[in-house]
Image 1: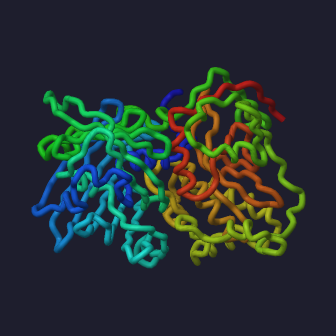
Image 2: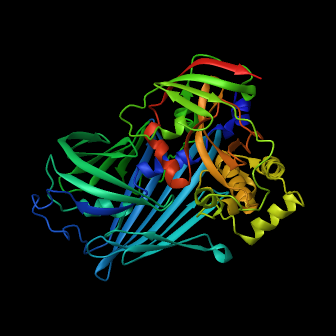
Image 3: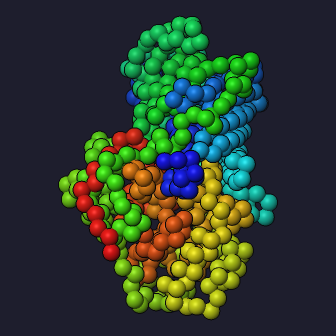
Length: 502
């Protein structure tokens, strides 16, 4: 595909994939506890408590090319500590250079339990801000800024710690091969919990910058992907290695901030794409697709959605049939009569779907006018998003209000805004994430479903209602559900068996 065509089709993968990669390298809040053998090490829970300031640097590489760095400062604060971390990534997103800046501040107590945190992700176009404080059995979270701040409450069963504090947690601890540490992880960017076990699997020699170090190798499975850490004998983090070539290496101030050049390196969209041998002609007009699916075994991925509505899974053969929009929805736009409680849930606002915001509702009324047929309203809302949101890759957490303000984004931004518009119009709607075909590859992509008597797919990026049959839905729901796609990255394989057009 030429550069111009790449830019034309850049929207076929959402920037959320990039965020999931960041999750893999430790941008998480973790609930920390030892599992089973914590007493074997003979180390108290306060073994890592600091008595002086620490300053550490890491260099970030993608497939051997330096694409960023992180800087972490840890300072004593009363009986606990203040952690300040910043990370800068230069990313190649569909041939276009993008710089993502992320900063985290957190206050931890002497046992590394989280008390307060603030995280900001800035892509230069969109700024995502989330802060929180722990109170008893919950986290009180605020998202947004100024008069757009929204408050949320999240259950927290037990003490929490922050990803930037985890290296300090291991410092001074006696560990040995066979030890296992348990973490219930909470990612503030998606507000989702995940149980993870980290196991000490080996003690070996590793080489960094021409020097050899004796190091413990620790392994963890995060969203179905292997994450490997190397700690020296004092528990100091030397290296982290994620999937698909993403690596962090210990460095210093003289080297870490320099020679960052991700713009000419591996394209994240291309790296995550799924290649197929057979070409699909007129892909946007395909109404039926039959593919053979492999690579799902042992991923732990929930296959239920592959056998719902427009999709049928039999063994490892998946068939997708484009649905037909009902001639008459069972109710008019804005009427909840006859809706089940499950459907009504898809009318409610969420952390990034602010469907009750006054400015958003005003825009919905302006677009819909006096029309009360839900099908017509849905098409009007989709057309507005398609025509008014500039199609550019944005590496940040998508939310409807930000997109309404900036009118810039990739498929994630198109999908989240349309979902909020539909809910604001009284039409149940949900986000979908899956893959879609272009140029002998399937790219990860986001779109929307609206309830119009049954679930009907809508793609505001491509202006399709319903979408073509090359859209293969893998999950639906909020950011927490979308994170489950991590289990499939680099593993999902497809073989085209058959397809038809109108």
